[in-house]
Length: 416
Ligand SMILES: Cc1cc2nc3c(=O)[nH]c(=O)nc-3n(C[C@H](O)[C@H](O)[C@H](O)COP(=O)(O)OP(=O)(O)OC[C@H]3O[C@@H](n4cnc5c(N)ncnc54)[C@H](O)[C@@H]3O)c2cc1C
Image 1 (tube, rainbow, N blue to C red):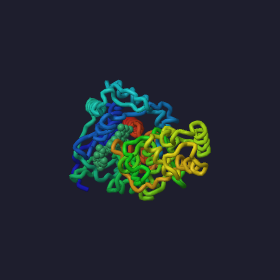
Image 2 (tube, rainbow, N blue to C red; image 1 turned 45 degrees about the horizontal axis):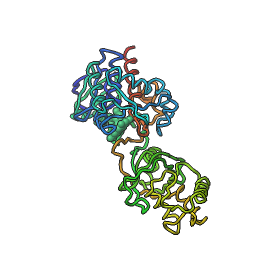
Image 3 (cartoon, rainbow, N blue to C red; image 1 turned 45 degrees about the vertical axis):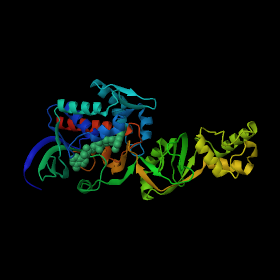
Image 4 (cartoon, helix red, strand yellow; image 1 turned 90 degrees about the horizontal axis):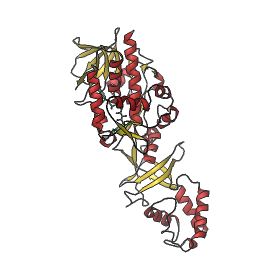
């Protein structure tokens, strides 16, 4: 490393995203006068906040019981329980509203700025950081760091060196490189990295030509995997998307990657009904409306075009009346409705929100302070950790919570 010392800080936050900003602001506000700097490799800060939520920024979720909230985190569920008691969605709402950003809650619990513009959140964070004295440097990519007697020494891309007493890594979704090597050098484990929140590629005659059609509530399972998701499903040009699919992609992020995104999925088109209950519904329909055409009387909230396909696939005669439905066809239809096999052959990232599953192993981090258990003075916040959530504002909530805890802990430790 070069011996030139360009600048010294009390606290360096690497990463000008949601977690880094929240931590830097919290640190400066808890301990005015500290030299807190954010180093961001990009030309712009808070770029994910800008594009988040389709440009509206789904800032958090109206789920106020920490025990309920953690259920939305396939990774981080156990570790985030304590942190959510310390900084919850209520605190996030209060924080932004006290700084003049009015928020609204949509019917499904997602919380957005009333302006419907992510820029409201970006400006609030930028202005608050600047008012609290946080120093920002963009275009500065941190390549490596080492622990020293007095703190840390960072090597940035232009070969200069920066020093600080406390270091926060808020790098977002990790990629293998020099920084992961540094972390491993300190004894940290990086949990396998994989994308989460993606849609499935399926090429099946059942769905061909149905792009745009949505089913209100389906159940999805995968053989041999202990996972079941429910929710709306959307047929796309290349396969399926929608909340039930995104949820499955999140819970299955690791093993789906191991399977190269090729596996067989079972769809229950009747919400969560058992095959026996579906048989009973079909039998009573056959008795109640024997002269009606099966194609013309879709059941279970299934859209008509999909219903016709499901009926034609499962039964021998097409376009028959309910009275003509044989017991064998009725059973075959109930099976096709509750255990419809589709082969997934690949994935596409969900353009509205995606995250990285994997990152710094959670058992190696002290969740009261977000400090490393391997290296004193080193903290983590946000997606760099092996924490990620379903869509709905939960990923940002994890960034605000862990950012707050790290910022407060760094301020407190330097106050002593
Ligand atoms: C399209 C999209 C939409 C989304 N919408 C939502 C939403 O509405 N609600 C929600 O809850 N979540 C949403 N998310 C997820 C959310 O954006 C992330 O979970 C969140 O941004 C994580 O914050 P972070 O600060 O940990 O990481 P990031 O926001 O990724 O910030 C990390 C920063 O660190 C910088 N950096 C990395 N390495 C270095 C280095 N070596 N040196 C210097 N700087 C470095 C990066 O350039 C980046 O600016 C969305 C994600 C995407 C991709």
